[in-house]
Image (cartoon, rainbow, N blue to C red; front, side, top):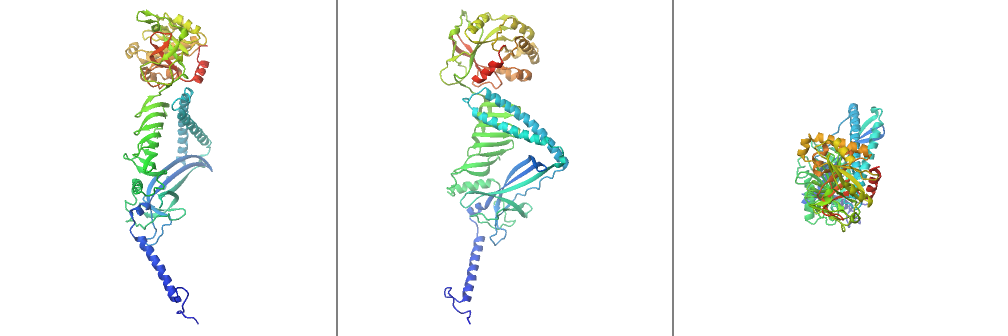
Length: 603
């Protein structure tokens, strides 16, 4: 019979000794593990214990099983720390603690659901009107521009986005209109929790998690769905008193951790790649940033007025291309400099209004044209092209070519200025007594040389619109194919007041426009200056909406109105004409010009 003292093959020990040694090794390993577990963490290990808890709360409205629309979709971000459940035992299993305790959310009563559905209908209808107006503005922009114009591709992209939003909103509104029995409508709430952290190789990881219990009144424990401790993380048990503010801190701590890691050369394998992190800038604005070599390059920034998405400098200021959507539903896409809109950009708003062009320090300057031979140019003339001082000159209609666009303002010109004259406007009358003695001769000569001709009248504040219209019609010519007649309105403020004020002036303008349109069967064009537009035109919205505008603006930027012609300089030069000549450009390229010729000329 064998005894316990019989030797075994295990290091030539007795069975009893081998058993004791085995358990001794187990106890030693356990002791070493526990000792390692309770040893103080290094700064790097403590930093790796930190994580970011992202909570997305969604509320959707259903009718039966059919989703109608999303009522609420919000995302919040909070810091957390990986923990062990028990003090002396490695027991993380994907657990973490955060000082974020989500609210239960609102329980909606039937009357509240009815109110929500009704408000959503009204909101969608209002938004559709706004989006439709913005789309109309963008379509107008596209109709008068070509691919060579700055920002054309951006406008195309924005217009496609707006149209997709319109389709989505229409579908949602149709679903709401299908509701016949509100008792079948319900609101379903869902919460998605995600933990984001940097592993032992400083690679960004994320997993879904769920709240599993309270640590205290102000702290909650979460656990990943796979219940697995992250690789390279050394969690520690933290009692309520141990969860100090330096472990569960502001979102700014996460960013400082990344900076320290990068400066110590940790994680160089991943730092050149795009890293997303959360920080707060000097103005308290939260940033979800994209980093390159430890430097913020782009991201999403939230403030009380809206959301910015795009390129940034290292301090979180908008720099480069980006978009901004404000709480007032004003959208901007374009270039930024020093946190302000500077360069080419497009702004649309519920006004509705679209402003596409150059910006400087958040101020809209206007659209800067590139003048080429592809554009359509014209001139307007009066007796001053025949009389310069005491000398009188004729016009050589066979030589008409535009050779200079004027010197008053800067202009971007591609190639040599040598443009044909596509149309000519000639002054016929002024007030009720003045006639241009060269009008009939110039009108006949221009038509004889194949020029498209239009006739204009200079408005006077000393006589009625009716009397001026009669004088203009009696002394002007209107043949088939002529350009629309024009009313030139350039009074001073004192002259307007002497006439009886702004309303009186616009009343006379309406009379003139109506009488001339009825007589010629062609809708006239209103010629005004930029200051007139800025100061008075909004006070006559019917006129602004109904009539095409020809505007005189001698600056670098195109006028910010719907217009048909732009008088861009009073000091141009034209072969065949002595002295300075007013140079005009049609608002659009050849397709738009052909469309204008089809629908706007004298029949």
